Amino acid sequence: MDDLEIIESASDPAVQRILDVTKSSRANIKTTLIEDPEPLVQCLKAGVEFIEVYGIETQPPTPELMELCRERNIPVRLFSTSVVNQVFKGERKPKNFGIARVPRPARFSDLARRGGDVIILDGVKIVGNIGAITRSALALGASGIILVDSDLTSVADRRLLRSSRGYVFSLPVVLATREEAISFVREEGIPLLMLDADGEVPLKSLGDSPERLALLFGSEKGGPSQMFEEASSASISIPMISSTESLNVSVSVGIVLHERSGPNFAARGADQR
Image (tube, rainbow, N blue to C red; front, side, top):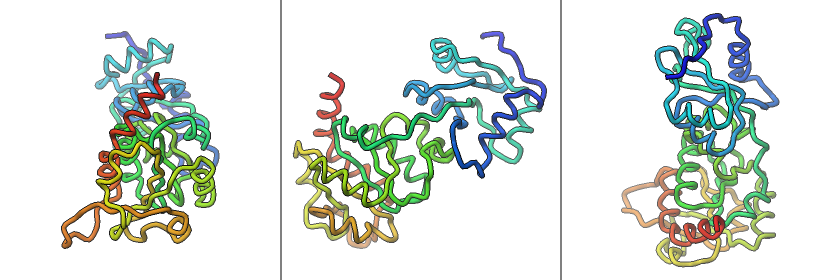
């Protein structure tokens, strides 16, 4: 194991950096805190630039994390137990954590360059659902996600980083208005399909279509907004037993993307060649 320096004083600049980035009142987010080994590893693999990575003296960074930090010349230090208790007072203490520079926000042009379906979330505000959808979208070959009316001001939101397990920087996640999202899919010529309990198009019929699609999911309570309903070319439904009122939105996205995995995997494979 590397002989790592231990931070034993709360006056160390690293302590203030962490306290600064965890302030909820920050308006301009340039740096963020990434917590726990898996999100750290995924962010590093996605090319996120780190200022420093930390472990706790009783829980040093994992070998995989240490190796990635060595490859990228990222400083690694340990926090003493007493100092880490001061920093994360009243919070869950992460095993490993790091301060990273927030990448530039994803743009529609990033989505345009990638193959695969586009996921549009309209009014989905529960960050845990957005994080789970991000992981499903990446795993099942979607090109990216457009978040509309999510109440998020940055995808570097600490809650989203946790719930996505760090995958939020591994594909484009664009914050947009409804007008911007509709304009993008129209300019790109991507059919917009809305998920609806009474949709006229059965989900199975989409499985083999090679056409790139924009798949719209509304909130569980409100569903898609009227603007998106009017812009959609068709609605699709997931077969369910009639006694079930609805599915969690992250579950719905997973089911639809699994049905679309063939075309999406082919599109993502073409991008990588």
